[in-house]
Amino acid sequence: MSITAQNVTKRFGDFVALDNVTVECPAGALVALLGPSGGGKTTLLRIIAGLEVPDSGTVLFRDDDISKRSARDRNVGFVFQHYALFRHMTVFENVAFGLRVRKWPEQKVRDRVKELLHLVRLEEKAAQYPANLSGGQKQRIALVRALAPEPKVLLLDEPFGALDAKVRAELRDWLRRFHDELHVTSIFVTHDQEEAFEVADRVVVLNKGRIEQQGMPIEVFEHPANEFVMDFLGNVNKLPVRVEGGRALLGETGTVELPAKLFGNGASGRTDAYIRPHELDISRTADGGNCMLGRIVHINPAGSVVKVRLLAEDFGLMINVDVTPDRYKALALKPNETVYVTPKSAKIFESDYSI
Amino acid sequence: MAQANARVLPGYRLSISFTLFYLSVLVIIPLGACVVTATQLSWEQFRAAVWTERARAAYALTFGAALVAATISGVVGLLIAWVLVRYEFPGKRIVDSLVDLPFALPTAVAGLVFSNLYVANGWLGRFLVPLGIEGAYSRFAIVLVLTFIGFPFVVRTLQPVLEALDTEAEEAAALLGASRWQTFRRITLPALLPGLLTGFALAFARGLGEYGSVVFVSGNMPFKTEIAAFLIVSRLEEGRPNSYREATAIATVLLCASFLMLVVINRLEALSRRA
Image: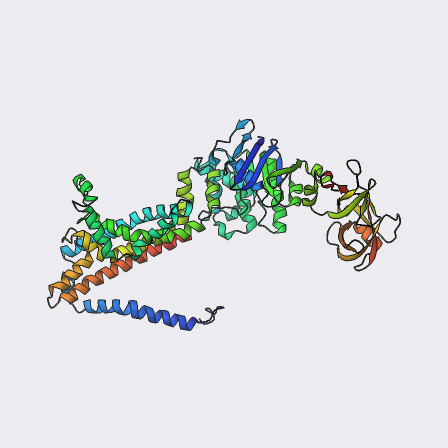
């Protein structure tokens, strides 16, 4: 079942939480609402769930306008960041709640709850109270509790935000699996871009109540629509440049040229260029000449790439560079060495092209 | 023992000694003295003093009225606490401080006001008495004043509980398809139950002990509107050689019954907290 939020606006006093936002989630998709806190993503999710009433705009499930329906009648599964389990009920009764209020026959309730607890491997916790569960277990219970009445829509509000890194990764897999097996349309809110890219089919970037960009993760990552998205997706070097005669040159007086596509008529001015860490190269010699000097401050070899932090003293800039482990070994980099850094590509956004 | 009670803040010995001393001087010794005085009667004399028909009627009224009043206080108090915590409205702070008024008001004043309002020619009585509602000099009058005195206990014990209540659990219930009533009964009420029982116990205990206002509104008619505390006073006023001992005998019965009931309520509260 597809979900559409059309021209949704919501204010809390003077604060505009959502400003004429339109989001479409195709049936069966797993969509991430991504953005900084206060960006409006939780408000949008709560409006879709019926927990919040928009000032204007409509919410459609398939082609049905459900804006007037109460949360109770929308038949959505909802997962809260802090689980919101019923503390005075056992794990079993928590999961059974949605079925009991729907007056399912007792035997069907038992079978369904057992099946769900088996799916998340928590059958042996059935008789326990939520207080006796770990955070990850609580969220698994919250997830199957939401799924128990077989909703067609699953909404998750920062579902993994309160969990540690390892449990997070595990729960992401659960979510992706459930989503695929149960044929639901899911929307989840996150401020963690890595999480969004890892799990979602589609990413919607929200900031200050507006949509900055939406699309497939690869599109958003490779072609960020603007400065904000570029910056928010993280792991990017922001370098001041000056534009002279259709060339972007680093710093006030430097001669290092950034290979970035320039917009407009190439008028002179100052702006910022964005370079991802893997778009920079480290070398021992100044081969091409179009490079800057950097002193290595820190090396983090834990991960699939080696993260090197350098200080470009000529420009007073900290720069992050990712190199492959092979390259790292070949260069035998050590802290405090001075090396050459060459930009391979860069991005300059038209909007902040100021003269 | 000292090890088990080692804390960042010192003073275990001092504070536990003070607590025991305080409880002894203010609670255990006076109540003990009451029991000891009563035991100076022989068993037959004791029985004759505490188990007359009039005394039994007084016990039934005291406990019955306190129980009914505490139950009403529970409902009314929950409603008021709910409104004060969940809603914003003009004059909310004034209403909030009005709740404390029965705590501060001398109960005799309450009794005076209530009896004046509900007598046959009082402001409310002139409408209610023709309808057969006797709000003064009746059992109903006793329940009325005991509710007035008891409900603030419920409000004040429930307010912090309601404020700390997880509203997300209510939202979760609604999203799972529960109606408002189902959400309240199955999610909210169980979370409030321990606090509600504490408030109920306090209101009940207060109702058992109330004297000042009740003597004004009840009319103190033996077998009908005479509470046990009034019976004690009238025993004392008789001035027979054994009057004082007989009064303490009735007091001892009240004491034991009250204690027993509070133990039971505390047990219930502990049970509801665990679930």
